[in-house]
Length: 336
Image (cartoon, rainbow, N blue to C red):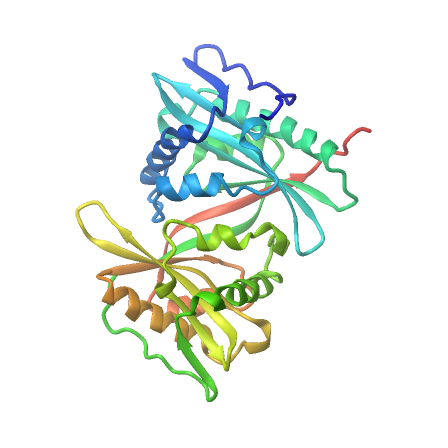
């Protein structure tokens, strides 16, 4: 059992009608997911919240123990939001103390976002003291554009927007691009024994991307044990038996019975770039998802990706539909 020694949850602002409490266990996920889903629906975010996948995520957290690193806010008998803090050493040599701060619209304007932000910064300072480092360190938060409550709290707290991301939708599965591969390459799903090599390739491919965690913070089991994972939907471009490019595809069932595909974690190893492999993997993925009944598909992109990913996705029929932003501020020096 975890001994609770960290900062207690904050007191709720007077008149808010809300209370804060600590995480009580995995059964909290259902209420947290519902609040998350209400926020996403309000802001038009494509990626849904899958309760089983969120449970899986919370059993594979790295550098974050929900018993001390997560608080929930309740109002009118339901969970309305939550905050959770984690830290990660980055591939670029920095460290971030990253906070998930989520508050559904019914709880905006009550001072709750500011209270959650203050608690998360105090807990991050505790983590910094527990895990000292000489790395340059930052407090980091992400938000969906349109979340005016969190945005106001971050700006008032001295945070600056530093990076932008987009969800991109292909609204139909007509006129799909052809799968064109350079000589010596093939495209197919990996066999079970090949999955570790694909995972290792993806870590190496993403290592040069902005804000990427060190590879040890991406456990293999978190990928393959995700309840949404289906090996037959993973598309890999191979050079012999060496994975060169990959996409983890998922199928999402929408309200009303429609099906939408997700092309997750599109990546190409640095030694195999500028050969059209990502385009070929996307083309194969779209055909595969259409065969699964998907009538549309989407993916996410760092809009400043130095490998011109945004232009590639646009050329494959994807268009931007929602935006999220990474905010940062320097981590204050911790006291010994």
